[in-house]
Every structure is written in C-alpha cells, then in structure tokens.
Length: 147
Image (tube, rainbow, N blue to C red; front, side, top):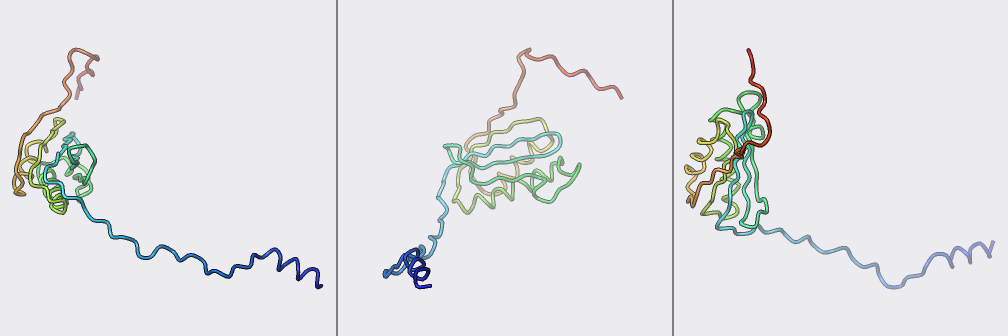
C-alpha cells in the first residue's frame, strides 16, 4: 500500500506557486468614429438590402426589409425601404457618421425611397452612384413570360 501511495504522490505534481489567475476584466470594446461612410443599397423585386461600410469596405452595420419585420410581398414596398434606411441610419449614428456616399444597385421599388430615407436622417449626401449591372449583349435574355 505504501508503494501505491508514493506512486500517486509522484504522479501528482506538487506546485507551491498559485495557479495564474484568469484575465482580469474583459476590456470594453469601443466603437470606431467613422465620419465618412458608404451605403450600398440592393433593391431587388422581393427585398431591399442595405449595408453601411467604412471607406475601406469593412461592414459596420446592415439592414433589410425582412429584418425590420416585413414579410412576404410587403418587403418589396417603398415604405419598407424607407423604414430599412431609417434603421440603418440609427445604427450609423453610433459610429458618428456625418457624410455618406450611396451606391444603388437593382431595379426594385425601394431604390428612390431608400435614398430619401437616408436624406431624412440628417446625414450629408456626398454622391449617389448607380451600379446596376447592364449587359453589353452578353448572355441571352430569358424568354418573356406568357400569362
């Protein structure tokens, strides 16, 4: 029995120093101050998606009509696009955004209203760009729908 006890003592390391304490308090993450930002709007037939990025392209906040409580065909309405823009600008206020450049893509009904929603929030618009892809006789068009 004494041999077993001595083996158990030998197996367990004897540490006289206390174990290192876990990191103290986690540091609070501070939000960056971004005075100038880009807003990317994708207005499809079914939804309106918006992203707020810094000039390097890192996404700070995003919003969509579906994320703001609209479901089904109501996601594609101009009112849903306005609400989406207002919610995105509320998130942008925490970053101190004062000027925005807007990049609009798509042919949905929320194109104009989303820009107006951003204007109503009080930020300064530097420029509005239309980045909707236009084919230069590339792929063959989809056949027209017959009802």
